Image 1 (cartoon, rainbow, N blue to C red):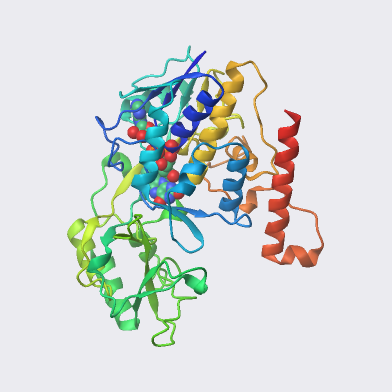
Image 2 (cartoon, protein in one colour; image 1 turned 120 degrees about the horizontal axis):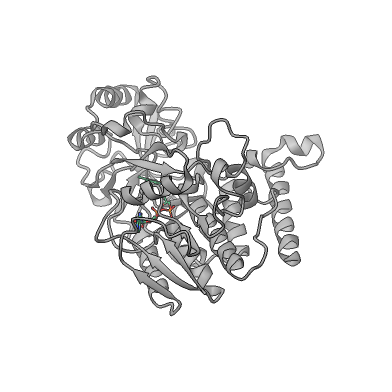
Length: 437
Ligand SMILES: Cc1cc2nc3c(=O)[nH]c(=O)nc-3n(C[C@H](O)[C@H](O)[C@H](O)COP(=O)(O)OP(=O)(O)OC[C@H]3O[C@@H](n4cnc5c(N)ncnc54)[C@H](O)[C@@H]3O)c2cc1C
């Protein structure tokens, strides 16, 4: 019994390990390092390409609940994430190099997984295959997938935030603090007064951007990862109400809330590197340097990675997949990861987990798992497989996709209590569901 997995990214790595756990032999194809995607930097598996944060681990947060469900379902990557954590306030952030190495070692040492360092150019629909080639799927494979699905691809764009060296930050101006004083003082904050903000804003809106290629011109941006120049184009205050919002960041030295604040989050275990939170950008590199160095505290910032913007590919899942991530056209073919329209690191790993479990069940002639909508993963899968979408766009885990919970109106008005109820129901439902299979 053998399956093919295309792409050893977040979803493909989890899927391959799930298959192997069920005794299935896996041919895992990965084109890096010979052929890079434009965003990945190494040949290692499960590389985080932008932020090093997976969002919240709190079960009363939608993304946090998803992580707890993944642990329940036996995710192979979640324990490695926990072992690679770096401090990040309420967020679950990791040392990306350490994590990727752990995943690579785990896969390479698994006797059931054969790693083939090669670009896949076309799909062989006769062999059970999970396609987890990600938002930056190579061109030849994209073409083959398009031919297989007979559906048009959709495109949109994500952008990567710059990373700087901590020892180049001026701490006479910058200060450590987490928003609303939550947890430790993990974040570095660069405060701006009105004049400094306006100077920053003017540099930003007048900076040249990198020309998009002709096929990228009709860019559809994912709202959660908009480039700062796109946010800025919506009005002078849009950044102050977005990634540069100063609320909950009272500067202890002055006792004031500043006009705007740029936050930096730890990016590596040693805390040498920090990324600029929400600072995804497609500005030319010279302009990025000028812009970053106009921020108080970052006058001498040493930029170790500049922001870039990339094509991001996903399939029309509502027309092509069922909620078990299996192709409606050919039961041998499953999709997993961002290419299915589940947006985000956590979501990509989660769909790899489900695709791996379901492919093993398919090979073993067992019914596929279609998780209940009361679970976050089940709700996500139902969302992407829902045929009624008029315009399908990728989606993160969120409470809005789950069926409402029955409770007293007073409780439902309290967001925290409502989320607690939804999370309790999700875990209970998942437990019961797993007992029935
Ligand atoms: C630029 C960018 C920034 C992003 N930033 C964030 C972020 O900050 N936070 C967040 O939550 N999400 C982010 N995302 C979204 C998403 O979470 C990540 O892209 C995530 O890595 C997707 O996981 P995946 O497994 O689907 O794809 P990937 O992790 O990209 O894995 C796909 C793998 O397939 C390989 N591959 C591609 N084509 C072939 C082929 N033909 N043959 C063999 N191998 C192939 C690739 O080399 C890659 O290793 C970002 C996406 C992009 C593109």
